[in-house]
Length: 250
Image 1 (spheres, helix red, strand yellow):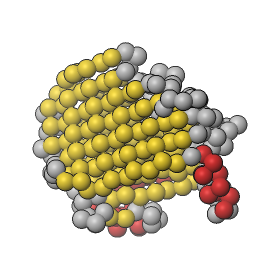
Image 2 (tube, rainbow, N blue to C red):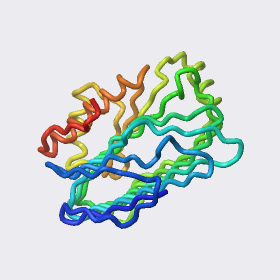
Image 3 (cartoon, rainbow, N blue to C red):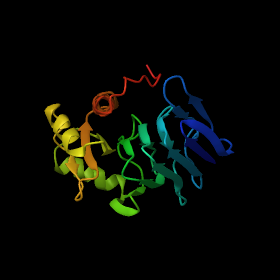
């Protein structure tokens, strides 16, 4: 199951589409791709591949709904992302939440390669599971790589179990069971960090070379955390002098 799209000078070219992967491409004001590639969810042994290349192009990406990962006794469901940006391109990927079902096993492999002239905004949301489950998944493994001008800028490599998260929230007496990570490369990272702090987002930090911003936000429910992400994303677009954008999910 895979989707590969190239955008060159704002024009889209479909390179690969393997069912049941599906997508919608809108181009009224900006390139907007809504992904429908996961169908009812990710099952054991599924391998979902998304590859998007931008050359002198802008693209907003969102998912149609939450990503659901189904139970597994042995095999992992795999979700692979590969993004390439060059020549003053801009990528904005606004994810819905990840819902790991009881006994789910999930592997995420995320790679973003960009040149210094391009920018991106990417957000990942992880929920506690279905309403009647609470971090009952078996294992989640993620490797997120961000490469700028051919050099590794940031690597995130972790494996975590539902039991570990349960113990963590009990130990810290926390009820903010939904958390999100936001990864940003803006036109001016230092200025954008100051803007976010002014809005009350104090968890963002620059990478060592200051080429990226990374932040973690937590909340008690999905609705509140999505509003926070929308505020951050709106500020990102304002910094780029871009108009507000409606993802069509209201």
